[in-house]
Length: 310
Image 1 (cartoon, one colour):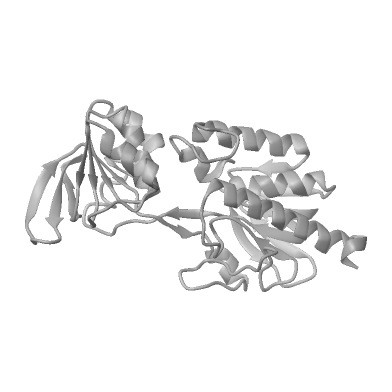
Image 2: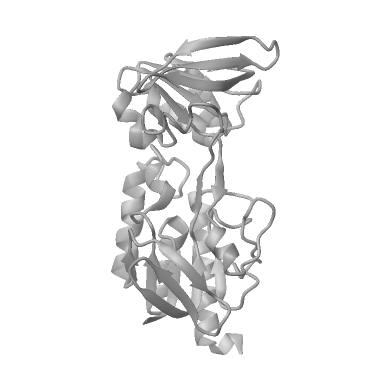
């Protein structure tokens, strides 16, 4: 059993910010993540709303945060998934596929995962033309026909990114207006190789060994038609990665988001949460960083009990 002051589960923007502040506060700090450090920020083609960077590639921002966290003194174990947690005792126990750890405080910053649309062909063609990450898989479809499902910020950012790679980009949205920030919506509509299909839903993804076409439904007329495409990028929101925390007794709201107070505290003493896994109403890199900082400083106060808390 390895002993730490603070264990942070998740090494995305929230977890890395918490790691920086935890280590700088003098806490022996460990970050665990089932993937490489950086989180979903690393999958963003471009980040244009993080203070200090008018425009930065998501992977670059994630790398800078990860390096900063390591230089601050935190230890990062990536590609080490958590198997179970016991959070009720005075010492919190975390078991991974490699080892067992215990700490006085734990911050849950496990983020969220991409939602599926649940249509025929989506699972069958995952990795064969169906993708949930434009920056990861977009370069495979240079000069080809791609379709994006969604109407929010992530869908528009992906459409803008793919417009510079693919030959034809089609954005399918069930409504008559995009839900994205105005600047993103205007940018999408200005692209000459981007077509937006309003009031349209995707019903099925078809192909032989790889995606070759989709079946589309006009939600107003109920008419269906097929469209030839080489790839489908699903961008319809995210759901929190909270299952293990809930199994360990952490309370959540409807939808599985972890309930926190303004200090990032959960219902379990010594357990905090930050980032997209929480019920915070805004899911941005900036808000995740702020929550991670708050969680780390609150964890420090919980562990060290400084004079201003007594």
